[in-house]
Length: 196
Length: 196
Image (cartoon, rainbow over all chains, first blue to last red; front, side, top):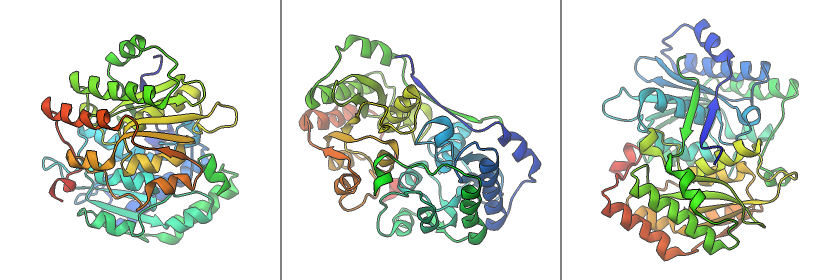
């Protein structure tokens, strides 16, 4: 088997982008502005789709890991911003359970409400809080198929003890899709979803 | 940012395991036996959870990529067998769309019906057919929280033009969980799911 390691890499600009930002970010709004900034930079640099996400320590606002969409650039449909941020945070902290009692509580801040895959990934990750910017419907309106989610996806997380906050800096978050369209970004989807 | 590459690696035994198998595998049953074998070997080697999966060319039965659960061993909640197989297949073929018209049709064969995350990942991947062994209820009975899935998850895939076949070599596939329990394997879940 010539390929036994799946390697999912953030764009090289991430490091300098983070260095330019002042941390900690202590409010939902400031964290959302940061992930919107990631999404916009990802568009500008043509390094992936119009989505940014990050894992923060909830109380302190310390950044644990950032993520941007890398689907087209890496050729990997799994490489959504939320998945990158979750995986990198776990790799950094050395645990599959970000809700471990040995760790401070952490949260996922994402520029758009999660698609079906990322929604499914959240309970597994141990995250205790999810903060969303643009709505699922904004992503769908822009042409991204968010997939088939449980009818009340927020409740499905809340029932597992995960707090869900939506609509943070929502207008700016939704405008990311306009910027993507204007930049001529590729709307990708699963093959058959293109026809639905 | 000291960690900007998420690296998800299969266990070292995978290569020799694949070498010992004769390919192509031309039936659903033979492909299922292969992924059940991956799950059992993963238990025996203590390299991850009791799940195996693979991507095959549907018509020829050629193996594209194999995957096993690596959640505890890699400390990454994303590293389900299906996600590993999908990601590695895409990396090998150089595309996020396994349903590309330039490629032969491919399918996912998985030892257990997909959890909510992997279910969400399937339409994004471009896969045209999913073949399952053990039932979602077998995994839940063994203590694994499969998450909140759409009420008719098979239909949700079929509506996207993805064929779903369940119950292939189902008894043997379900017995994987017994083997895992007997080997003293760790039932992991998201933090709060443990309490539900």
